[in-house]
Length: 106
Image (cartoon, rainbow, N blue to C red; front, side, top):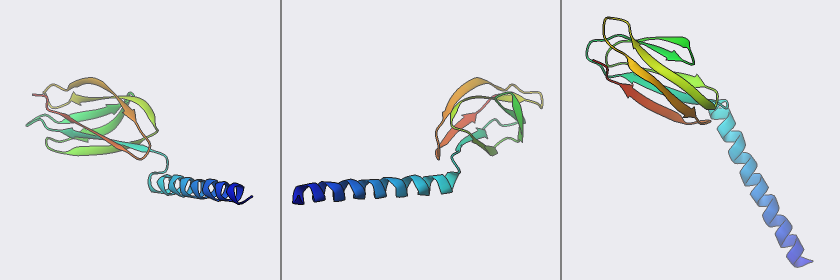
């Protein structure tokens, strides 16, 4: 009887700890992840495309963060001021994590 009670208490403690961790991560990131892209080129303004959607432009030396649902996404920087961009790349977005990338097209 005493051994069964100890096992029950241990399982209950594990469940409480697990559920409190899950709740805190859901409230801080809303179940989303972040893609952070920096334009490290010297002169080229870049357009950030994620899954075929325009997320705006990045001047040289600037970065942009995009909140995305977890899963695989494609992104690309396209030169819009006469310079080149960077090839399409794939990224796996993980809940509550940031994936950071740089593009230094000439």
